[in-house]
Amino acid sequence: MPVRPGAALVLGMLRLGATSGYAIKKAVDSSTRFFWATSLSQVYPELARLEERGLVERSADPHGARERSAYAVTAAGEEALRAWLRSPVRTIPQFRVEPVLRLFLADALPREDQLALVRGMRAQAARVEEEIRTQIVPAGQALEAATGLRFPGVVARLGADLYGFGAQWLEALERELTEGEPGA
Amino acid sequence: MPVRPGAALVLGMLRLGATSGYAIKKAVDSSTRFFWATSLSQVYPELARLEERGLVERSADPHGARERSAYAVTAAGEEALRAWLRSPVRTIPQFRVEPVLRLFLADALPREDQLALVRGMRAQAARVEEEIRTQIVPAGQALEAATGLRFPGVVARLGADLYGFGAQWLEALERELTEGEPGA
DNA sequence: AGGGTCATGTAACTAGTTACATGATTGA
DNA sequence: TCAATCATGTAACTAGTTACATGACCCT
Image 1 (cartoon, chains in turn purple, cyan, orange, blue):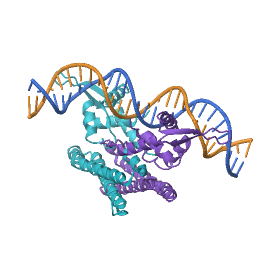
Image 2 (cartoon, rainbow over the protein chains, first blue to last red; image 1 turned 30 degrees about the vertical axis):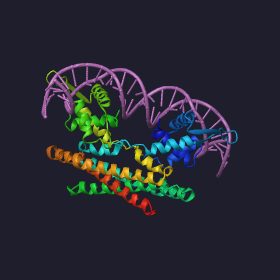
Image 3 (cartoon, rainbow over the protein chains, first blue to last red; image 1 turned 120 degrees about the horizontal axis):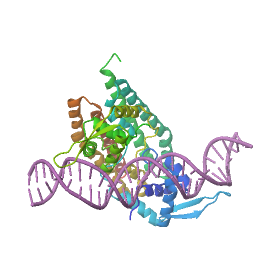
Image 4 (cartoon, chains in turn brown, blue, yellow, green; image 1 turned 45 degrees about the horizontal axis):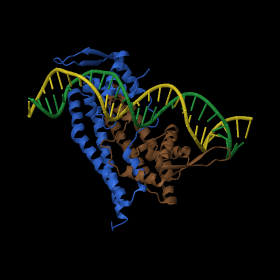
């Protein structure tokens, strides 16, 4: 039975150097967050399931009196991750983008609110692009320099470029919306 | 209490001309599917909830011996939809894109499988772009011509352009990956 | 001393998918 | 006549979020 994306994410973060559940969550927040977020209440049960299936190995790793578990990916875990990476992609990527749904339904609003919506979306896209460029891209470069792992950096660039493209597209839409009515 | 996205989607599709639950699902499949899909088992309970709150009105609309309900958005429903459209957007748009997660973890694969992954993603992005351009964009134009509603068409163009940008980006990545090793 | 971070989990709830169940109408 | 589509729902399950609960370590 192959792993699912949530399990693959945990295995991947362990491979990338995180060892505790808490560290996995931190790693997600500073890398995959923009296209795949998670929470501690998903990570801990996932680690337990992976351990039960023999895909990770737990060892006690206390820090002073503070309990901590260190997890490591087993050979079977490595194989399961590769199997998932090679498995066929679901035909239709299911992703929900609330702002785009708003845009789709924007005919229900008066013109000035439509414009406000588009402006808000553009600002948000630009903000996210900036955040990825200043925080996540450099982290990806550092990771590659330190370990040779290149794809986290690749994905960071992809994210930044996609958000940048979206921001530009929305800026053009803004112009298109204001053009028709110079009196506004 | 404002509506949530799922309810807004149903209200919006009713406004766009769908009247039955089944028709709403069909409308979603031919318009918002790429950024917000739904299923009949979400639509029917949602209609019931909206009716109970007085945001839609149900009337019997049988077709021969086949039962059918026709729903219409009430004034309160229109107001609720506008209120949602004006409400603040959640700061971080949560969207899960499985192929990008695969790319992020692709360092676990040998080079040739990495390349296959990127090629598959590019082909998929190009296919979706094509599907939107040939099916959804024209539907948006037809809707605008018939009713004046412009944003479904705007969103269709945005979707097509974003997938097109993604496909180009992945093509460049493909070249980057093959460049290093002319022997492969 | 006290706030922020590290650390681990559970419980309750919300959202979404897949499978089940039924039956009429339409067009080839 | 037969398959595809129209039409409506429920049940069981899977996934994900938010709230709760606890406590140690680190830096100022």
